[in-house]
Amino acid sequence: MQTNIKINIYDLLNHLEKRRAMYLGNEYTFQSLDAFLTGFSISADKTQYISDMYNDFSDFNIWLLGHLPKHFGQSGGWHWQISNRNQNDDENAFKEFFEFVKVFKSSKKNVEQIKIKPFEFKKTEFNIETKTEIEKQEIIDSIHKITLENSKTIWLKGYHKKKLTYNQWCLSKEAFADMLDNLDKGINNTF
Image (cartoon, rainbow, N blue to C red):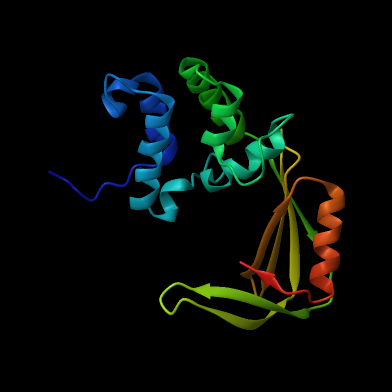
């Protein structure tokens, strides 16, 4: 018996869509899907969210915010957004979730490199072990503006020597311009 097999999230979702009761129990609800996928995310590693054929599933929550014509706050994930759209209708919530996943996973990615002069910025990180905030000086020497079809979400990724040092997202071109401006001014950014 092999115990080290790592299933990809998209393979899991394909099975789950066809056999919900097998994975979620006979009395499954849309909430049980959220609990199941939360459990999966706790035990999964980054490679299980990535596919050579599809978009990184880690971006699904943020993509969905920009995909929906109306969302219910930016802090809620996919479950929150879909549940609020389908109150007391688990069957339709499941249907929407799997439809959104299909659109997301095959949405074309556009990466635009923005020319910049390298600059330093302050970054504050929270250390869980010591429960303290640590301020760091980071350098960005290249910036990528990333968009996915079917969503107005824009990701800004800053790199130093091809290592990711800055990662933010927004839902409008104006907010993206503000992020670039604030980053260029060296405004403190917390991750």
